Length: 498
Image 1 (cartoon, rainbow, N blue to C red):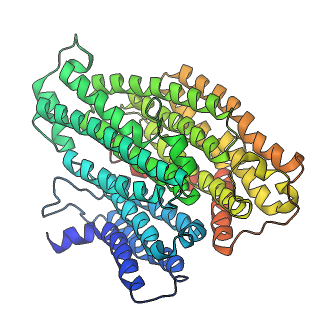
Image 2 (image 1 turned 180 degrees about the vertical axis):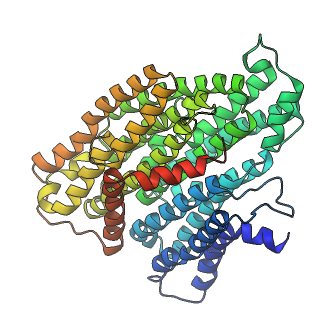
Image 3 (image 1 turned 90 degrees about the horizontal axis):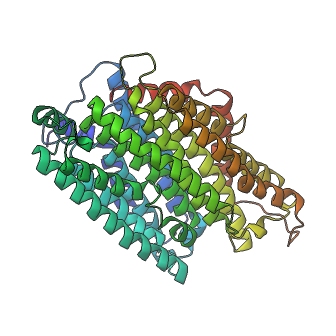
């Protein structure tokens, strides 16, 4: 490995190095209060390296690997977009995690280290351009999350971790089998070579995907990735895992893990299967999954009385909204609208990240005070903690997709992409589902404002949680009023895939 390769890997190495440093220093320092601030501040190092890499790209400097990473790892605007998103999400999750980490004081440093190791795996995933590298990065991402989900060591948390571990293993096996079939058909593992080999081999116009082997491989790959992004019908793990895991880890799963999953899905399908005929076929699969995910997620969320389970089904629905951008891949021609679908998915991911993190930060503040995640514990929150209730209500409005929030702008953008791709029916399904989702999102607001509180004691979130809530709520408002910077960032990121 050359020094240039190390520079290209610097954000991932800095994140993993920070995790190792926390573990080592914790062995000699007894006071645990420094861990959370150190974890948050330490993320400045991978952030600085990511900024430097972006500036190098802007300056026209080559970031191609000249060593062992040359065919497995790439640094481009697409991967850097996700690294910025993942580092920001990890920092907010660290701010929210103090109360949960202190419940297991002996292992508090391990809590932050596991989250950082998982973040480094997600960052690797965004840059991986080779099937074996993708698989290894996925495992580095998933295994620490399984441990974090079971970290509280009570019955529900242990069940959460075990269920995630088993089902993650099954999904990884499906994904690996799909990759093996694609390798067997093409003889290549590098994504760009897979696409080139498919062209050379030729496809049978009378068969779906031109080959039953390729069809089966693609279906298994979609199934494996579907688990990672909690898309229907691969979402069966989400409600129980979200409910049993520490709430900050639930937030991490719902935002960072989903972002990494979409990063690798877009990389694989836009690079390995870019042929117009194939793009039309796999975009049809994603259109069907998008409609089912939106509908099932929203309908089942209506019946939930636990807010974490409600948000679990909500994230299934949002996976559907995000797949609308993937389904719009059929627009991939040389027109000014060629990037609307994929850039819509990235813009939606950015808006969803700040919105969902804001919602979970408020849930953390309330559940730490009340000791429960049941919706009834939010009764009268408008009187007990007016600012906290206002922030949570604003997040619920954004998840619904109402102005002046980033959720509204994101849905306008992504549904517009569907219409431009000739998928007006999918946009209509999305709009109808947004109306359905208003019922359970605004029910939270109704409970906070109109229901009598069980306890009149004011709720004051800890300073780190309050800071996380302020940053994310400000992001929801700022990108809702002025979304242009995030849209431009997303369009610059997807330009390398088209």
